[in-house]
Length: 287
Image (cartoon, rainbow, N blue to C red; front, side, top):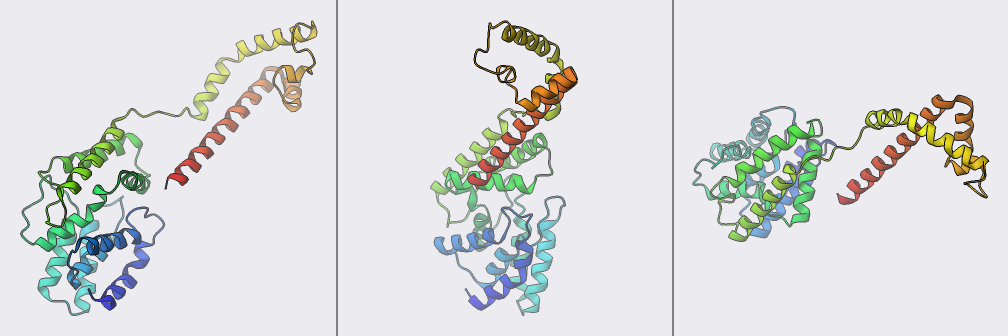
């Protein structure tokens, strides 16, 4: 592996891989593939470096032909540095094949090309916690896709991997890698098939609150009578007995039902904001 060649390639692609919209397909992904290649003893001639470094150079989940456009950019860069036609053809074939579209990928006799494809899929054989983080990062890259649609299409892609005779086809990946990858993929498929737990929207909650206002008003009237009669709320002010702040009670006294509606909707809003903030913190901590 030529370090100067690698450095030049990285310098060229870095701005693209550092885009904030990339949560998995970023510069860390490329570094991880190079590290994995070294760890497994996969040769890294210049053509392999170009294929690995450029394979996600163009990455926009909203459009097709990312691999084609990445291969074009790699070819231009490689030819400008005097790479042979044969090596450029390897780069082109490797990046195009990284779409991983076919159920049992077409026969490949080039062991280095098989190793390239296996490296690109090596995340599938990662420990489960790392795989789960990868799955979460992919979802973030497709944030614009509705949940049900994402589950359907992501599930189809994952099933296509399980439908292959083997996910990994080079000699650099073991049966243990294959088994772990299949467990991880099946685990994600099972999760995607889990019914969606729909969080109630503010309008859902608002409708529920407004529908129950009659019952709430009646209950409040009863509690006010009980407080005045000394049957409840001993030692508490009226607003404390009713479970309101002083400001809420004043609004209720002034505006009656309309004030009660405002109080309840404000409480629902606060509750939902707190729940969403908690969810954001939990997601950030899991990354």
